[in-house]
Image (cartoon, rainbow, N blue to C red):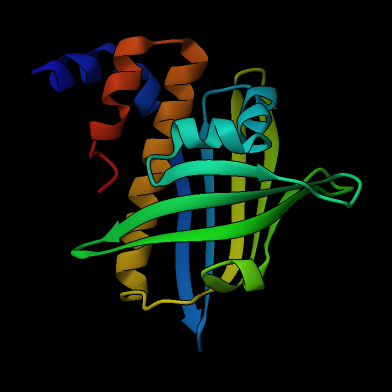
Length: 192
């Protein structure tokens, strides 16, 4: 009942999310994931969240925790994250150590340190583009090699689409400081 009320309260927010494309593919042991989406928040707010691993924990239900680590490279932030992800009946908990850097073109790039991670390889890039004062296009590109089995790419793509939708819904709710919406954003299943 509470979930239904919450969805009605913030339905305008959730309808403002547009997932333009989601694609997952596998070549050998490498997975490439690309998605493009539009969300009804200012670009500055989107970047504020995406550039701060602690804030990403607040909007991404799979990311369980982040521990900040020292980095001896200027402009580089280093952290360890703990993630719990499920695809259908297959669930996995894993940890990775990542280096985050803002590139000259303003992309946010995260690179996995394989020796300290459960991924053998990983490069993840976020790009944001303002579409107006309260609308932002977010592009994500990743190439990674998990150190564990992953179900089919079709199942991965479906999970990614649902996860992206939930993350964006939570970002919009946070931007609007809508507490009811925050409580129910995880429960919306319209992206399936």
